[in-house]
Image 1 (cartoon, rainbow over the protein chains, first blue to last red):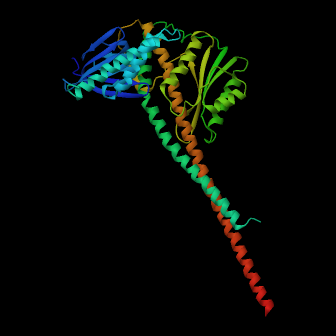
Image 2: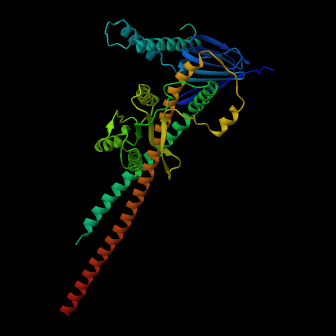
Image 3: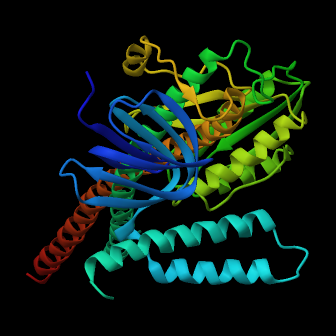
Length: 145
Length: 290
């Protein structure tokens, strides 16, 4: 028999961020997004930088989180996400993310040979995801804004 | 002979000291609570990570990874976690004694150390150990970034075969009264610690689909595991430090109270003696006149 819901657990090294029942979870896998429904086959994957979204038991409302790297373990009734950092949409400071984006872009555009390309690139991706996730909360709260 | 005024001054000064120690006790108590909460909050991640790692390790016949490689222990690195400040009873002294014991037990091998915390840095530097790196002023607010930095440094040295094993010396927080000094091996990674609760759950093994090759996942998980181990040690050590400071300040406050009581008693005796002397002088003066 298939379970009706998935227990979604999101932990970061510093705290447990979330433990909630969900009916559908989308994970930002290293090689692309994964959709998980109850009864999924057991799976372990690396996560990239991206957006995690899930539908809670109520069904229609979905919540979004910005995830930066980590691992996920999927069982038929449980999804455990070990993320390096994870932020809910409403926790994201949009202005800070935009500043970080500008900084990263500037760094990537400069011709300074001392620039750590990988780091700047990761910073860029992280900022983009945070803005993407952060904006979702804005538009949901203030229609038309 | 000390006059009444001298006594009053001393009493006032001891009272001031007592106020400071009492304030420090309350500050330490508040920080201890915060440190404990942080340590508890960090537990789920460490637990889940260890579980995932064990599951992968059990599936690979002969896990091969540079962090699992055993070598004869000729070059040993010890990470020593102490406090940034004193006034915490024997907290720093105990850890340093443990560290020195450890170094003595491994005499003749090539030893190096990474002190975390000002007290340990100063002492180990003076003792002439080779410091690979030092981290000071990081324990007031333990964060994952520092743990990661340390982890990166030691795993890198280990993978490059510049060291053969890594230990971590710190004070584990058990209860407020009993600090528990431990020396644990960080590298090479041996058995992954399992607590009873999760060990039971794992008896039913699941056949996972791996999105990435097992070895690659293992390679990503192992460094994370080292990071959580270091983070845990830092959180424990900071809780233990605040606990030690709280106890030390509590007894200092009590001692100050005892000193004040003794001084007050003495002062009253001196005052009484002075009054008695005066009365005798008056009485004997009066009898001469008669």
